[in-house]
Image (cartoon, rainbow, N blue to C red; front, side):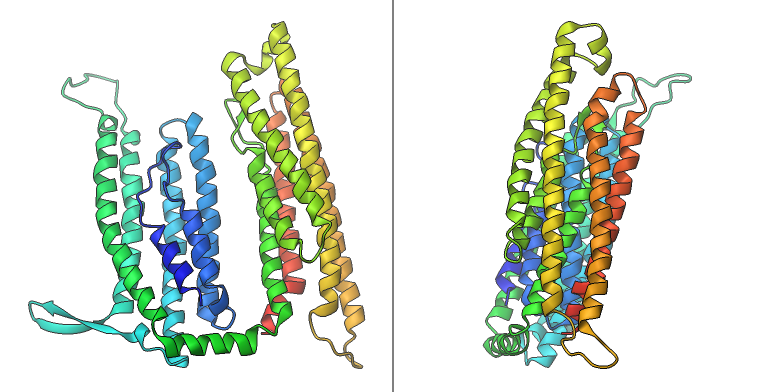
Length: 457
């Protein structure tokens, strides 16, 4: 029932995180959270609290992907950017991780009560000065998980705070003053060692707990019987769950299509946005084969984005954008780069438009098999489906128009940058409008069609 995947996912969270683009998170937390969410997929289909926990871990996975992008941006960022990223990401992680873990154990407790589990309520005797007392293993693990993750966040943030030390150059400077940033490598070593020590205990406790759940055969058999009898026959439910992820991935693809330059180098590389789009298209392939073209076009865009990143780094290491007005070699290299970027954005636009068409076809097919299937004097499924189809079609059409405007602005970015310094403001505004409407449209589709199908469970 997914306990093995959950174990593997939680184990991947044990390592220390260092805010360095090269080192970073040795075992990516996003992978761990995705594994936990995958492990909860079956149980979340009929236990509400586990569905909430799964949603929380999915949010954490996407947050960690955003954190990875931010760490890439730190390659060319100032030192004070690292404490900011560590603080903001740490606060968001804590706000999501604590409720997710609480929902996880509450859901498991309910499952144990409802389906005859005994391992979830196992206790152990602990010796205290005042005597011995029994504590629940699950409750103790829940507390330790939260403690360990919060300590891990603190161990990531504290070494970065040394970057915030400032000197007052007005008056006398004491020769005995020292810069805390020189001790930063030592902080990394000390806090990483502490995280590893606590992490070893964390791994042992996690493995023991989930292994005991897997060995509780009556409990596992009851869960499997419930899943086979009540969930597996609901084909619409599985379609809705998959399509919800498709819509979320497309929304992330739109949000990460922003041009975010540091020293004129776009750190939000195109393969990030196209990677989300390709994942969404692959998930939609069983329902609409047209999505395969979106995968192909997105893959070409990924290759071009890597090429353009290399060319950007090489050019802006030697010249500035306005060097094209003075240096012939800079002129040739810059506009060669601009042309390949135009090609990249055209492939990106084509992949988005093809995806929108495929999504519209998939929605049309899903409307026929989802929702209430009976007609009566008060309710006409055909008319209701037609109304829903028109609303969704309008949203996707406007999303496509905004995508065209966004990628036209992106194509013009390099050409206008030489003479128009505010071009980044214009392209950013257009992209934000496109991304915001794409997120809104995906949410509308989800609410009108797929959320309702899951509610029927």
